[in-house]
Length: 249
Ligand SMILES: Nc1ncnc2c1ncn2[C@@H]1O[C@H](COP(=O)(O)OP(=O)(O)OP(=O)(O)O)[C@@H](O)[C@H]1O
Image (tube, rainbow, N blue to C red; front, side, top):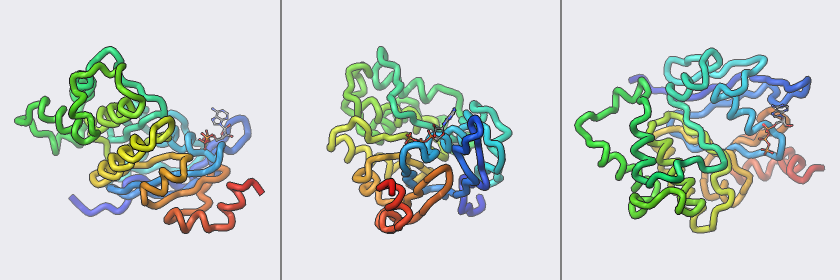
């Protein structure tokens, strides 16, 4: 396979809602195994950006290209985009509450495999082993037999991340994972996302700056639907434009 520097390329994307430009000529790129934090004040366009990448919202202008073949996601349905390897974790955990952790992970594994994972699919590996591997990955090895509804908020979030990882996405979009978590849960979530980003791109939208700091990754600051600044957290938070936006001056 050829070397690829960009997994996702968003370029010149704009979208208006009733004449209001929620995304305004947005351009940026994500590498194939990269952890990226997207921050920005309320209304900056973070959710709309994720909606565009996942096909929920169609932009008025611009390009969204994905993978080594640079396929346009704009021509694809939400289901096709998910199949192509884009996973999304919404803020609220959505696991099957009545089922055990094990059953939840197994269901996620049984969901249709996407075309590219055929390459890595090991038919000899029993699904049970894969379920345990996923449980290990998200720190739920000891919870496999528990009913998901009984898990803590943080554990439910990890289970859902495990279910998304079962689908082997190449790009995982995660919306405010730290919200409502205890400090210990946040720490574990950081480790989990850092680890997941070693083999895929993970984009984390987050308000909590302490959490972003611990992710220790490149940060993209959105404001009024465009990139205001990009770089390390210390770099972007020292940027006068970013300071102005956050202090509302
Ligand atoms: N479907 C819609 N119809 C009308 N306006 C919308 C719609 N979706 C988003 N907007 C507007 O677009 C702007 C960007 O919203 P978006 O939710 O993407 O921001 P955000 O950065 O995710 O904000 P927050 O941090 O508060 O979640 C906001 O002003 C919002 O009110």
